[in-house]
Amino acid sequence: MPSPQSEFSVEVDRVLQDLVPTFMDNRRKDIAQLETSLRQNDFDTIRDIGHKMCGSGGSYGFEAISVIGKTLETSASRNDAAAVEQAVRSLSDYVERVRISYV
Image (cartoon, rainbow, N blue to C red):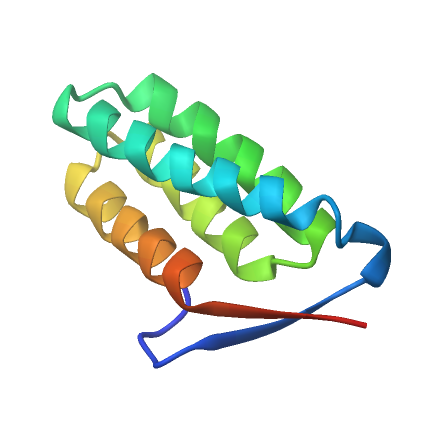
């Protein structure tokens, strides 16, 4: 997972420029759903969200989101609430600090 730092820089293909804001908004919605699911010990939903993030992050140029998604998926499969909580914090930090440039 990405380490804490002041910001993350990501270069995204200009072709995706119109799609990225929605993609990032959806990750913010995922964070809210993950927090709710964690409080409810709903590891199936967490695993599903993680699986989708793992598959989609790299397609948009956000490899860190794919890595976090895989961590969520794996941790939820083990019902590991502490690891899920850490991954959600990492995702939230990443989404808050990422700086996107289009190339």
